[in-house]
Length: 277
Image 1: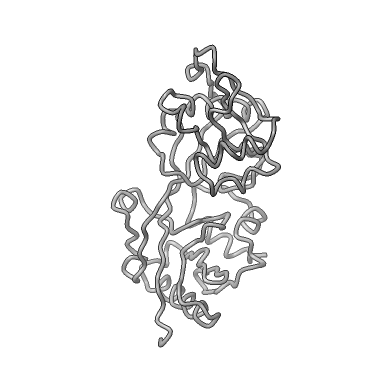
Image 2: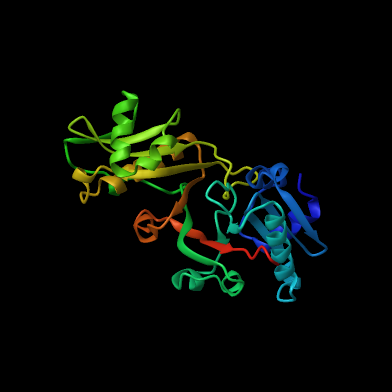
């Protein structure tokens, strides 16, 4: 478990996040990480992934972050790796370096970019407040279109998912899937999570999620996806969730149509390491 003082530093760095100590430990997967400690900060490394670097705000811009990063890179090389990756696609906490809106718009991370890291992809984390949310204005008037949780043949579902993104199929095992049906056929789908432990978690906060949102190619451009996510969000609200967590998307403007807000931005930086160092 992460020492309490480092949890306090994390909270100082990310004041908008309300994670409890236990939730942070779960998302960081602390037991599988090497924690590099400094009096005023810390870093977490797993294999060649730099999961997190935190420096107390009052001690930033004094070289402490640079030293922690150098220590991370040295550990990664000692472990036999030649590439350092920020975050990691399997990270439940931060999938990349957290950036500002300005950095995101320029596809840049000032700190890591100066240290030789480069990225060819980035994403945002978004949230939808459910207390006053209503799906009414997003409902389709098409009589041939209806929505609901899927309970049919899984091979049929896998085929539809693969038509959108074959890499997503692996995520559709034993999870609730909310679908749009056109004339009885799957037209769209999304995975729905209930009571997730995620970046939006905290004491007495119930968080759900909608992810891997897809509409099959032949039924796109008819507003099916937006209606589906709106109605899935309403299901989360009925269940008692306070928030819908929209994880790792680049469709920021699309989700904003539902009233969703961006609360974090990630930059997927990597760096080839000099073994001779």
